Image (tube, rainbow, N blue to C red; front, top):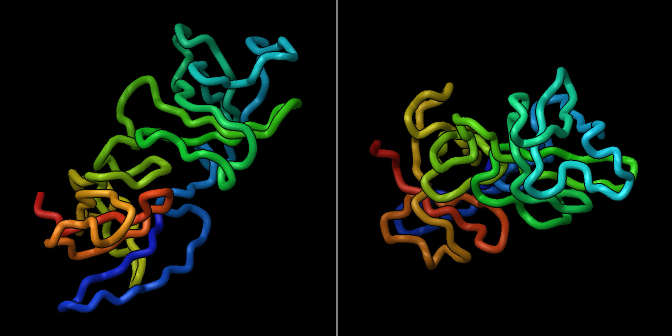
Length: 198
């Protein structure tokens, strides 16, 4: 995920703006995988029922995501938060969300914050994925003025260069050894990062 960064050089902090496109540090478009859609299944045939409501589970079938009982062996992920409206206008998903699905059914448009039922969990700290950038995540320099998240254990395509140690509302809340400020969005938009040391 791409993020705006601010490097600290000498005693002067220079803001480096980033052209955000598509997926950003905390505003990832709602989706499970490229092309995923969600469809109403027989499990939610009641017209009053909310499709993929909070606590319900789903499974991926080809390019669709369907609701199934959580005790089904086909269930792969559970809804940990469900919101109406567009993701960019609504509440943020919980920090450990693995992926987000846009839900367009016959009654409403919304999004479901999904947590996989089995590991690996890309939304966990340091795992290199998920729709949000959180404390203990690692990033690498994708190009000048832009960093992207990567797995801290080195299992991703790019080795980690910085670890985000703290998420704060303002730069003044970052530790003195902060070497990089990462824009992660939300009410506490500053990620305090220092060089990755394992």
